[in-house]
Image (cartoon, rainbow, N blue to C red; front, top):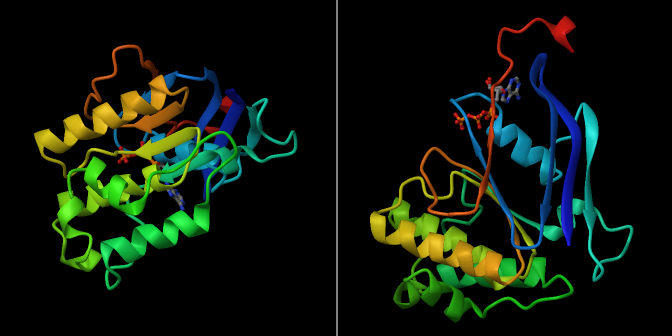
Length: 214
Ligand SMILES: Nc1ncnc2c1ncn2[C@@H]1O[C@H](COP(=O)(O)OP(=O)(O)OP(=O)(O)O)[C@@H](O)[C@H]1O
């Protein structure tokens, strides 16, 4: 299994955000994006997740278990700043929706909704509307979405924002399990995720740099 970014450059509106970003991640490896606000971390994650087109370069996915024509985005779970849950549906309804909608990629199995809620420490409140949950509880449940459907690549944007210390350690341990099971992680964060062997890519940003440097 291998996720490969080749010479990526991206633009938002008129602005150049980054250029010449390349990396290769194999099964069990993680890459953490760091850098100041606006340096392009979220933009790079969205490019890799297939939500934005790169200006230049490409993302490639190789796996013996996947079709050769499969888009890299299909191998990825993307957890952005927002939680992608409906406030008026219960936690259980939200997670059940995502489980059915996403399904499992070949090569693994997601947890049941109950197991996933237990794994993030909130198994007793799945009957509540998502909108009733605190900000930290909502983030935990958004993380549970990663567990109900199998995807080998997790792309996480500031996964631990709004979390207490206990939740941070729960997330770190779930991420470690994902990596130990041969998964791949790409994350943007301002807080250390506690991953000893993570590679780091420090985004510099291009704000104010003239276009002719390209
Ligand atoms: N739709 C857009 N049009 C123009 N510029 C945009 C657009 N979206 C984002 N940008 C700009 O792209 C740059 C990179 O933003 P991005 O969200 O990738 O940064 P970031 O490193 O994730 O920041 P943070 O640490 O604050 O989350 C910023 O300067 C932002 O203002």
